[in-house]
Image 1: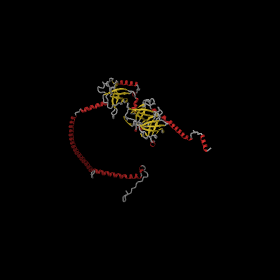
Image 2: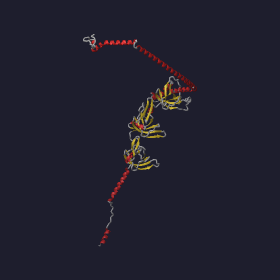
Image 3: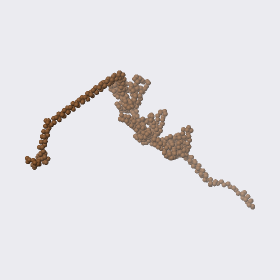
Image 4: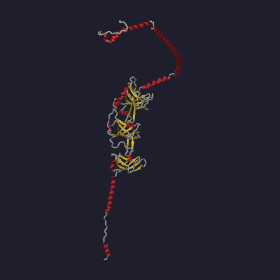
Length: 556
């Protein structure tokens, strides 16, 4: 066979079998694809939820860069920032890690951390280099939530801080702000958290927080009062200055306590409402809850009398003025005649050592009505000379005539006695009327005539005085000349008596001679005493004193 035949036969006899095996080279991309798919699935299955946070502004926030932190731990990142449709703010979409998803509750809060400087301190300085970030205040209360409205400012009290939340309200025009302190005996024990104004009630409410353990001091009888700035009070003992802490001098603040004389009461364990009083005195007044109301009909001026003025009995405060010039159209028979001004006052049983209950009120009313029949009267008196403030004074006046019992608008009337000030005013007015009634023109004419007469009399007296001066001078000169002549005559007589040849001269000369003779005789004795002082007592051993003789003399 030829070679061609052999090849032809071989080709016809060969069977071609197709290979079905997969190359091992495909294993690498398949494994990589599986790992990638698993990673995608794992990332998708374990990623945290997307949340939206509404901010007023997105200052400093950047997608994929700005972190969300809680307790300085990253728990999310900002993914997208977009404007709200109404342009009132921005919507920030953020991804929260799955490990922190359980912290997204209704009470969770978000805010932007940036450098802040305020009276309460400096915060957020770390963001000067790293940039702003969003802080999440987690909560475990409420249902899950994924849409939030951020706070404009960080909360004053961190979540989870032990203590007590209270709500305070004030009718005063003086307002507090977030961060203002709550002070107890000089220590800062809490702060104001936020402010809410109720448009319907027109009352400002303040949510505040009292830190532990001071929250145990809050009881049902606790009163809050304002201690902002410096308070000056002029009392009988002098000027009184009241201040709080140094912080309340710079900002505002309140303090609290239980008024003296009241029990501490039950401790408050949940949010409660309290009023803020203007000062400590007003807060202390709240321990007197009940009072018996009376009316006094004032016919004098009530200028200086204010609501809240004290009602005193013998110098002790037993109540206060509730209302001035109360009116009721149905009852007018007491006020139309004489234009008496009705003033409503309250006498509080707890101030007169009676129980603060219905029984004490009945006792005070019965006792007051009994005293009215025996001269118990009210009067307005001046309490402060500088301010002109008046108060109601209750006293017993036995000389007063019995007054019939009256009522006004259902209140018992306490008869009023004319005040001392009003009496003085009437006397002064009467004196002024008398003074005004004097004939001033006639008196002026008479006074002019009297002055002219007095002027003429004064001129005459002046002339007489001049004449008297001349006479006195003349008499004075004559007296001096007479005295001088008398003195010269006496001197001349004295000189004449002691002149040579006169009797006085001879007597004086004889006296001098006798004195010289006596001294000469005493000379030996004096010499002996000079030499021997004891010679007068001891006579022995005394030698005579020899005197030298003059030369040429005799021996005698």
